Length: 331
Image 1 (tube, one colour):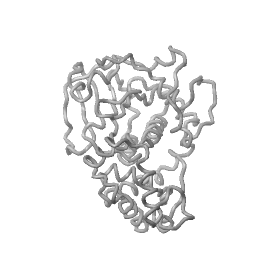
Image 2 (cartoon, one colour):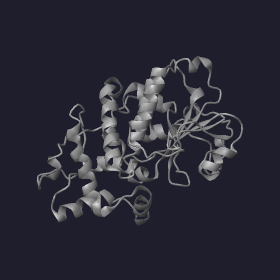
Image 3 (cartoon, helix red, strand yellow):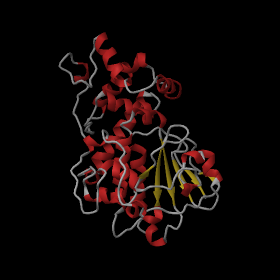
Image 4 (cartoon, helix red, strand yellow):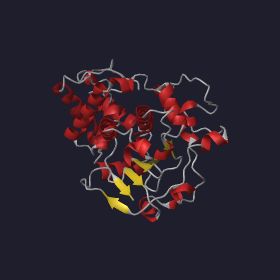
């Protein structure tokens, strides 16, 4: 991920500021606000206002208040503090400035405490590339009925001789980083469906408490995601009706009892790696270039389908966590 270093004072500098920084002049504020909302429709802006408390008239002040808190945590290296970046965190915490700063600090603290995970944090890293090509994660092309992007993981397809759990987690976090660049997804959010059907004891034995703690912290703090009770859905059992109460069949592939064509595990990998990828090809795409790439077709059908799985789901059960925790289980 590209990083730019901004001090809190640099954001209030005059015409020498970065194009992403806000000027203190009224004209500069108007330009910056137009920039931050340039890709949003009037309907999406209204949704952000109603559901996330986003107010275009105070956006400059909201961003700057979060930026001004950075000096209170000299122990953390805030590698990026531009307006677009801070806005993601504000939306994730419904414009509560204090909670936004806490999330921003946790985000960079997580990176700081897990430096090895973020070495070569780009799609041409061999481990990340392999995980993506094996469908970790899969990303459906179409959103659900609420505009949320749907990510899919078939846990039983984890080949431990090919992918480490850390590389799978890195591929998931990188995918979320790429997707969260879309302002509409910052507002609409995500759904992550994990199918645990046929997950073996041998596979489970690799999920140590430390590994699970790392995964939970990664999904909580990295990247900034709107907290929703239905962000994370666990599937196992044999009843799809509960899943369809959350996501309409019209938004799901046939493996999940939906009306869309069968799940194509290669779609997201092709989007990031390019349309003509193979196992033997090396890639030089970095994170900075990912968000400008369009979904691409092509690819070998056998390769695209090798991580597909028949889904067995069950009845909906809310875990014993608080309702604000993004975790649902269907078993």
